[in-house]
Each structure stands twice: as C-alpha cells, then as structure tokens.
Image 1 (spheres, helix red, strand yellow):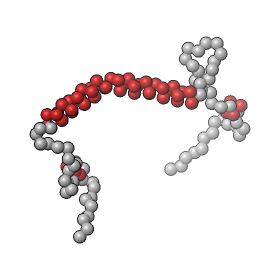
Image 2 (image 1 turned 180 degrees about the horizontal axis):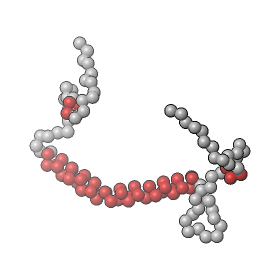
Image 3 (image 1 turned 90 degrees about the horizontal axis):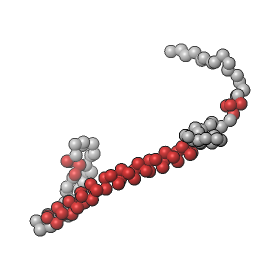
Image 4 (image 1 turned 45 degrees about the horizontal axis):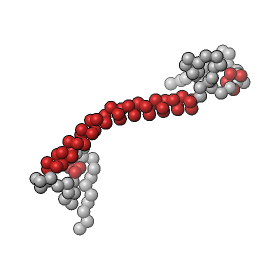
Length: 112
C-alpha cells in the first residue's frame, strides 16, 4: 500500500503564536466577569472529588445490606456452633483448583 503525505496549503515551518502558548483549559461554568482558565489539574481534582463523593454515596447505600449480611452470618455461626461444624483448615491433600471451572493450573509434582 502506498500512502501520500498531505500537508495543508497554509502549512508553515514556523509555529504560530497560538501554538507556542500553553493549551487553554475550559472556563468555570457560570463564571462572570474575569474568565479564569481551568487547568487539567483542576479538572482532574474536580473529577476526583466527584468520584470520591459517588463512592461515599455507594458505600452509604450498601451499608445497611452489609450490616444485615454480617448479622445473618453471625446468626448462622451461632446455629452451627452446636452441630460440630468447625471452620478448621482443609486437609493437606485438598486441592481446591479441582473444583474450579478452569483447569489451567498444573498440580505441583511431589518429590519421592
């Protein structure tokens, strides 16, 4: 395939005065009087604050569900306390990867 280099007809070798100035940011919405340019850093801080608020709201929204779930787990733990079920570690020969849907791991070789 051949590609042809296309240059605009008003292309010049020297950069224009606009190109030498730093990129202008957006202005504050609703700003009156003097227009204050907003830098990328300011926009990033604003977005970070927005995300932090959204995360805090999401955590506040799911907190009651987590509290109910923890209470239910504690309740079931008390019910199972007298049944002999324990939270002991699995036996040494137990291989949980055998129960996973993907068998991509190779079992370690035992030395003789």
